[in-house]
Image 1 (spheres, helix red, strand yellow):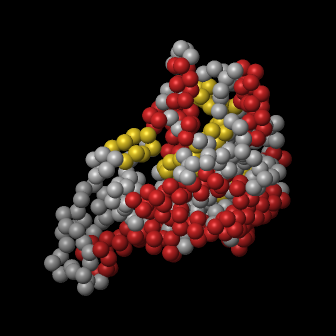
Image 2: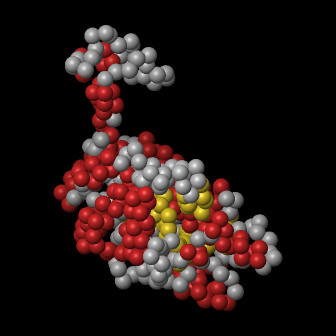
Image 3: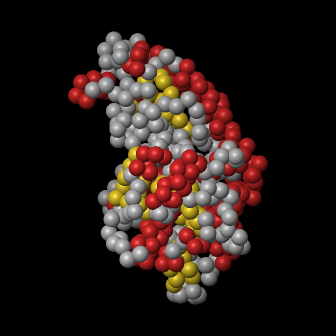
Amino acid sequence: MNKQKPTDNLTTEVYASSAMRSAAPTQTLPTQGTTPQVAYRMVKDETYAETRPELNLATFVTTYMDEEATRLMNEAINVNYIDQTEYPRVALICGRCINMVANLWHTPEKEEWKTGAVGIGSSEACMLGGVAAWLRWRERRKAAGKPCDKPNLVMSSAYQVVWEKFCQLWQIEMRTVPLSEDHLTLDPEQALALCDEHTICIVPICGVTWTGLNDDVEALDKALDAYNKRTGYDIPIHVDAASGGFILPFTKPQCKWDFRLKWVYSISTSGHKYGLVYPGLGWVVWKDKQYLPAEMSFSVNYLGASIKQVGLNFSRPAAQILGQYYNFIRYGMEGYKAIQETSMEVARYCHEQIGKMKCFRNYSKEVDNPLFIWQMCPNYDRTAKWTLYDLQDKLKQSGWMVPAYTMPKNIEQMVVMRVVVRQGFSRQMADELLRDIADAVAEFDALKYPTTSRLKYEQQEKQYGKVFAH
């Protein structure tokens, strides 16, 4: 950025300033600064095309909150949650949030303050749940005089990448059950077939990132109970409920997936997904304090008092915690139910309408959470001159972010698209999306020659064989 002219000051028009005549800095700090108004405008103008979050149907992350919630969080943007000596009321509010989440999941714990922790996101919450399971397993092995060098974890191949990170960082073998035409979610019997005395836990998912479906935790718990009795093992369940943790309690309260089940010892969720808070918040809750190993709690005294903390990260924002508590007060049970059921209704509508298009086939008949995937219909696909990647690019031209991607191991040749419905995505917007999809398909159907992605797809098909279709 060029050196600012002496005439530039707070009264200079933004687009008349010298900063606006210079290229944006990319390598080094500018020699001189500029006014807040000009700095704001430069950043805002560069990201303008990315500021329509309501059209981003790829992300699970909350993109809409009340103005009052946004103001509340902005006013706490400089508050560090971990400094509990300076901000004791924030720590108290965090404890209240953990209580509310734990009771939402039917915790049996009778203590006034339930056993849980806040995370930067559901990834940290998953890590904490996994670490606790690993430490409990290691302690049992040590007590029995057995080696602790070969821990493993069992879950579906449709895992979120945090679990791959966890297993790699803590040197735990990941054993995955592949998806198939007959098993669209985790098959309990196949999961148990992978278990042994070294298994630290089984991780079912409620709200699979790849598909939107829920693993059957109740069936897994029942099968695991019989397995543990037969083998003498003590393998528990950690539920990765990043999405489903704030969906199931309101849309399917009768469904048993939580602490009502015997072997569910811990659950993690994402407050910044269907907890309806802006990015940077996760929660993990244990069934009882006995399931949280003491060595996971660290104490420091250099902030003015002795502070105990459970987490991978130390400093963390308080704003998201206040935002979560605001939502709990603002919406209550009925409000959350209304919001989540609306998202479910819009998702089911989109699912139904897309399923009616002759070129598409839905992955599943039901919609478990406000998201779903679909693929090209095999009969249509044989003569099509385009792929779902072309549709993704075409929708981008209208501002929509609808991802196309390949499925996990065993069905990795299947290409699908996914829509994630969140608060802020209405039925009217759904109709706009469906019209844009229909218009794009009509345009593709009129093509005389195949697209580049189609030619690449056909080449891969010859190399690997036909894609999986059910």
